[in-house]
Length: 256
Length: 256
DNA sequence: CGCTGTGTTGACAGGTCTCAATATAAGTGG
DNA sequence: CCACTTATATTGAGACCTGTCAACACAGCG
Image 1 (cartoon, chains in turn red, blue, yellow, orange):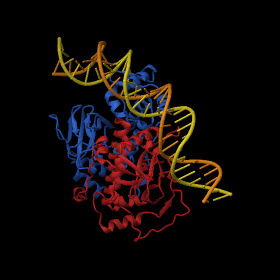
Image 2 (cartoon, helix red, strand yellow):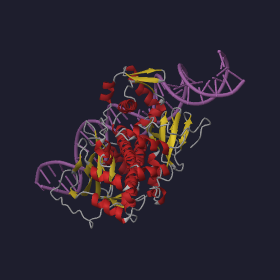
Image 3 (cartoon, rainbow over the protein chains, first blue to last red):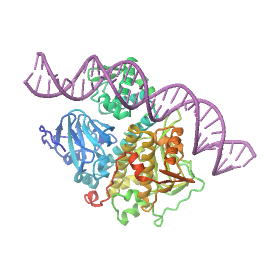
Image 4 (cartoon, rainbow over the protein chains, first blue to last red):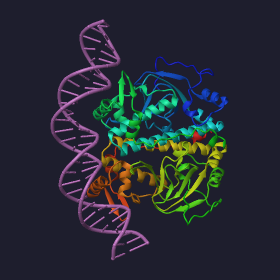
């Protein structure tokens, strides 16, 4: 990992990780959370646009995003790239590449971020002695698959306006999952170039499509933030099926 | 699951499952394989076009594909659908929906198939007492994420010919992974409609694109089979990055 | 034998991309 | 704080790729 000059280590019990994402399917007990936090490496600050790990780099573990946004790209030889995932705080980064020797995706800080590392040894420890945490990671990976499947469907089967609406709604829903009091107004650090790379359109066409949303009053821009003013209309436009993630603790963990 | 009238139960030690996919990252010992086979439910035969589990159906576990091809679709309200995954023998089916109450994808038999079930209880047992098998499932899930990311990149950033080439090559590579002696000639049970649903094109455009491959001699059709006659040309056309899956047993399992 | 699913082809419409240019905002160094 | 540079956003015109509509051939199958 490229270390920022501002990087520093504050590992310790008081320095608990944001585990919202891993804990979403069921509560882990205090001991499990504490051990998980202890397994994480030092937290590292990085500036926006810094590269956490580039496609082709050797895989030495995964990362836990403590704060900020990270974009995962698949780079193509011609210089274009596909934004395959926008990561928000508490996300596990880079796990897909665990199946590979070298990273399949480039992880790029979209905002200033703080990340911690989870080494192979830490992963091994989790699977060896923390089966409920292992199951949580497994479920998160499968949740990511559903999200990728929905993105694939959006890009493969729907128009530019539908794609953009679905993507903006998806980001909003994820922010709500992190903070239930999140309103429809949120900071949007992704540029229109990012949006195009995410939904399979050119920057120019994203601009035209986004402009239609603005003109229609469905979205309003306020500085670097946007407000989704007409969620029902956006939802109707974006035909994406609703996904209700499991949150009933007993369903799976009781069996472990 | 919809039971075929031909379904029958042959669970038993002699009835070992095809575990190529789960074993790909590392060898499990005989005891682990045996217990895994015992955990699986009865094997069930189903005819082509039968639905294993439909989008919206309650999730009660996952499936192990013993033989045949299965397609996973995300269905849209307007009747169109995205083919998000082609499953081959030894694949785990339906795992993405573990994170949900109801299935995110429809699993449809593309050929006549034989599947076995893996219940929640079986999954719990795996995570509780077979950590190396759990890790294998986790790695498979992450491998699937890479594959989905590559499909997303293909659809989002490349032309119709590039998409079709990448998809045909992907199928071929997976067949080779199952059978290293697999030649470039293989049965293709997917219709052009399937292909279009997989790579985000209309059937008609798939036909035109495929025809160009035929006219160029890159692909030859032999009955229900096709032969990829010019793999280098197809690979150059499909800009998809090559993914070399880990197969060094020690890297992760030694830590468990 | 008709039926249904699949493959094939042409003409045309439409959505998205490309190219070019400009405006606006953000970042940087003096 | 300003001048400069860079990144991002915006707009128009035209080309190209892909989709739509319509029609027909062909095969498998009951």
